[in-house]
Length: 320
Image (tube, helix red, strand yellow):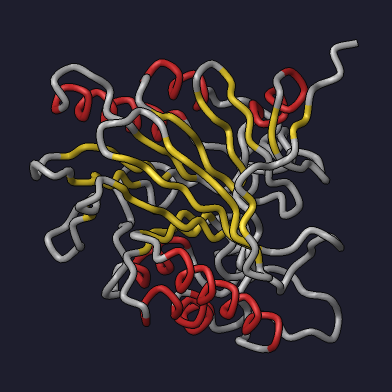
């Protein structure tokens, strides 16, 4: 972490709370965007998070329907999209999605722009790695040493191979980087894996597997729109032994979580109004609370009407 980045610390009571905002899809600052801003403000006011993590599609630079104006000023859209975090002086991090840099701006340019913000704690990350914005943030404990870690991984946009359609995936060099960082932190922690969480935009194929084979909690109203090839990130996370849970977005009307081989595969709750949703499935935010010294976390949803969802509905797979 560069010297101008704020050090993230557990509170005196030993907790650290993260608000996950996902798929904000900010474009022009018009009515739908302003509703997204209002929701983010409400979550910040009521939950007082120590960190905000935007898990992709923070802005929308893709195609629009005929007659609609595309987002031609991505830097302005970014400024407006993160204003709730900046104006409330809350540290924030971002991993990019498939719509953040479709047109008018490159990932490198957007990542460089993020680094100019006073309260942004994520960085462009190692330049030799695939993607932009691969990062690890260390959370400082009461004794001044790292007590937990947060990984951000760029899951890309669309497949770079002509024979593979659909979405991109976390590449092997990124996975090797994660394993190196995991080993470094484990050694730093006296040989014990440091409690960690991982954030990215596009779900892993294992999100579909966990829904089909394990008891899950929450709703699944659309297909898991993952890459069509499995790059092995989940296997690396299992081997690394530090990541307790992963958090993604991308599929706006899925918000479930389920545990597979000791890792909780978790969707956020879609935050943005300037995009598709589902009647009866309000926008919101997922909150995540770590406690220093515990290899566990709490999570709940805060919805746009101010209500809190502490327990999501149980889904038991059909084993027939």
